[in-house]
Length: 117
Image (cartoon, rainbow, N blue to C red; front, top):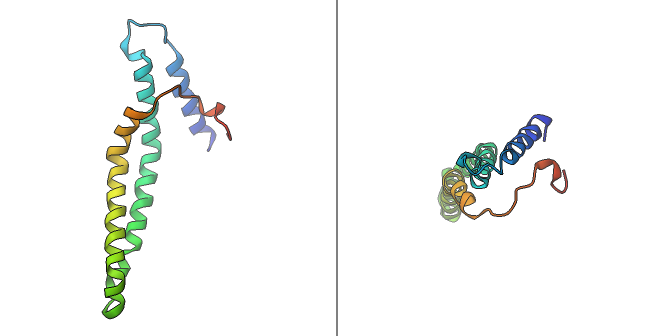
């Protein structure tokens, strides 16, 4: 990861740490800070995930051109894989970010303090 992205992650973390004692401002609540960090992560990873699944989907399209015995043999595989990957691509940018907001709990550590960084 380059320094700009790491700096952006640390900036989100440090912005989240500021004003945590100020209960009068709901925008500085821990919940809004967590939501902002999760949404920033989704925006960073989402396009790459979507297009990687889309490329896998497109890679199976030539199988549909097969004819005769090969076509009958591999067409069910191609249909299944294409529909599964297309569904996964759509869910990865629609449902997964919402589920992340609902289920990710605990303290979010800055990227610089993560193991393996």
